[in-house]
Structures are given as C-alpha cells and as structure tokens.
Image (cartoon, rainbow, N blue to C red; front, side):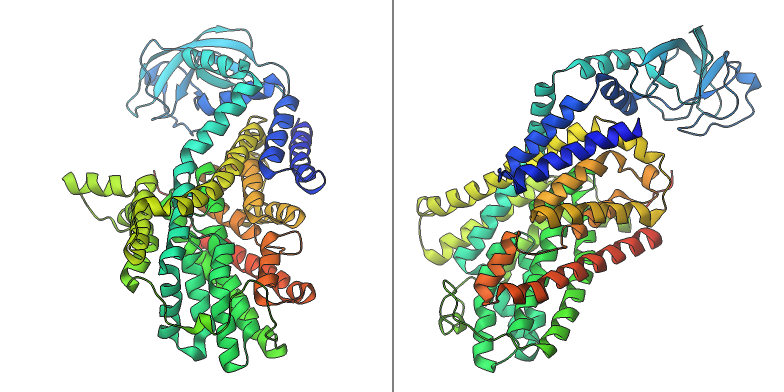
Length: 567
C-alpha cells in the first residue's frame, strides 16, 4: 500500500509543478488542481483509516479483573499476547465512563475497515487505567487493530462519506481563517512603513550604529529586521539605492552590499512569521507562533551570517561595477537625511507584535507566573491577529502623522496593500487544501513506521522543499507544497524532537536554488545592475550555502535541544 500512497503523492506534486511550469497557471489554481487530483485518487478506505488515526484510543490486552493486573501499559502500543478476555487503556487516553461502548476496527491495506469486536468499560484500577472486557469478538484481536468509541466511529464514517468538494472547501476556509488577517495586516504594515519613511529610518539607524566601514553588516541586520513584516521585493527596492549611494561615495563594495541585503531579507522571509511561508508552515505543523518567531530568528541569523561570509569572500575576488539601472532612483537623492518618524516609533510596528506574540513562549520557558487581569490582557494582546492589527494601526498612524493627511487619503495605498495580500492569502489557502488532501491519503501513518534518525526527516524535508523551489522558483509556494507532505507526521512522539525543527528545515529548504525562474532573482538584477551571469555566479551559490547552513543549525538544535517536555 505504501507504494500506492506514494504514487498518489507524486501525482499531486507533479500536477502542481506542471501547472506552474508548463501551463503557466497561477499558483493557487495549480495547487487546487493538485488537491483535486489527490482527492480523486484517494480511496474511501484510506480516508476512513485517516479519520480513525485521529480518533482512536491506545490500548493493550489485559485480564479485566483488576486484582490480576501486575503489568503497566505502554501508550500507543499493544504489549503481550492478544487476548480474547479484556483490554486496558492508558491514563489520559480520553474522558470516558464506565459502561462506555467501544468498537474494535481492523484496517488492512485498501480494504474497507471491518468491525471485528465490541467492548465495554467496567472500571479503572489504582493507576487510573480503564479496564474493559470484550462482549463480541468475531476474531482474536491483533496488534494493529484500532479501538474507538462507538460515537466516534459514526463520526469517522460521516467524515469519510463527505464529497470531495466539501472537503476541499472546508480545508480552504480553515486555512484562510488561520492566516488571512495576519497576512493582510503584515502587508499593510510593510506598505505603511515604506510610505511613512519608517523603513528608511531603520536602515539609516543601522548604518549609523555600525559605521560606514561595516555598512554591509548594517544592511544585513536591517534587511533581516525589515524582512519580518515586509516582503522581500519591497525590502530590496527600499535598501538597494542606499547600497548604490555608498558605492558611489566609496568606489567599492557594491557586490558586498547587494549580497548582504539579500542574505538578511531572504532568510527572514522564509523563517520568521508573519511572512506567509513560515506563518503557514507553523500553522500546518501546529507550532506555537511565538516559538516559530524565536527559533526562526536564531536559525535565520546563523544562515544569514553564512551568506555574509560568502559575500565577504566574493567581494574580495570580484568588483561589481556601478551601472545605470532603470527605476532605481538617483544615487544623489538616496544619500539625503531620512524624512520619517523617530527611531522608536519606526521600530514599533516590527518589534511590538514580535514581543507580544513571543511573550507567552518566553514566559513558559522561564517559568514566570502571571495571573489575574494582567494575564488576560497579555493573552489577548499576544494573539497573532490582535498583535498584527495593533501594529498595523500604529504603522498607518505614522503615515498620517508624517504626511499630515486624512485616513481617507490613504485609501489607495491601503487597497493596494490588501490586494497584494489577497493574492498571497489565496495561494496559501489553496496550499492548505492541497495539504489536507495529502494527509487524507494516510501518508503520515506510513511515514511513522519508516525508520529514520533525528537528522533523516529534517534532511528529507529540506531536500523535498529544495527540489520544489528549484523547479518552480517561489520560496513560499515550495514551503506550502512541501509542508502538505510532512504535516501529518509532525508530532514530537513521531519525530523525537519538537515539530518547530521540521518547520525550520522546510524554511531552509526554500532557499536553494535561486535562479532565473525566481522573480526575486530578476528584482536583484534590475536594482543592483547585476547581469544574469553575475547573479548566477553569486546569488545562486549563496542561496545554497545559506540553506545548508540553516539546516545544519536546525539539526544541531534538534540534537541538543529537542524541546520534549516530560509527561
């Protein structure tokens, strides 16, 4: 059966890639077609197995007489010889009660699941484990038989019988509900920071702090910071004129400045929410957004520093000339003082939501105790939607302050930002639909039993994402497509480490290889004056180096800090 499941998976991925590359379809349409194909190829028996996997109870055979119990249970596994007398449930399996009717279900390959027995709970022992006895058994229980409540079995059958259109629509809507507000607000923040001059203030502050001799580090740091709420293209359009201005003033290091900007902005784009790719991956893998921000920032900085070292090495071997570039603005104009808000207010739309969303994660890590009204207030403000709404309000307020205009005057700019976000939201929601259809094949159930070390799954996720990115060019689409394959696997019990590391591996895999099918590749060429040959010589290998460096940092983190909480 595993070969059949893999064939369906490959057919779905191939449909997405062919739709984008050959037929030139919009990514949303290609992802929906891929989801449709996977759904059509998935037998109902596979969907029943998937629904059973979500609702089944861990159990083991046992004598239903409490006085005879001398062994302990192992959650999720049946230990000992199969028994026709009774069974036990590990503590905390689910809220159950004496007299509850349970069903024993057998699933074999693609055959429709078969009811082979009924059991009833008769009480619990001193260890808090439920004891039950079989009432009806048509066959001796097996190790891979699944135990489920009778009420849940009816739900399983109802879910499995739902039409493909209903299942796709639900998955599309659920994904939209989880990411739409955040992406829309992030787009507004980016546009407002650009219009108010706040982004320019941040870049120039970094340049003052680091000094002209370390301007490349300033570009790296400010690019990474701005890459959190602002899309890469916008960051590069904003910062590159400053790099060109410094090149005109000093007569050197344009390649270093260009690569430093790319290194900082691209790594934040793939690893730190609320940018769409890492936001979607975190949601699909059920990773706390605050943890994703913290871990993504750490791994992203490691990868960005690797890119910076490559930039230093390349700059010593090649001098990128200052060429005339259409649409880049005059070099002289970019050297003037920024017209924007004070630095504190300029930073606030970026830093405030990161702090609010991350606070709960930080509090739990350090064991801080917060109660009462303050706890409720922090929980409310730390919600991703509320935090981004607040940051967007501040960013728009900065535009009103600096331009001395009315809110109605900003309507065209805000509409443009929301329109841009709408396209990303639709692509992301289609990716959620594609992932949901893949999960219903039961691919995660088969991946669980595939042997692998800590690094194996991280490397596999990295390579799969890298292959998709190299083929179709978009980092965001590659992350959206790849996470659909691995999302069902992503629990600490299955992986041996926190799912955040799987999310990071997928994010790092979305970096290689940047080449001519990537829109960002052409933005870099257009704004920096690089030729296609120069971009392939420097941007492409740097993207590979940063991705691999981020993957190594992720693997080391999973080894040293698996973030598994004792139970």
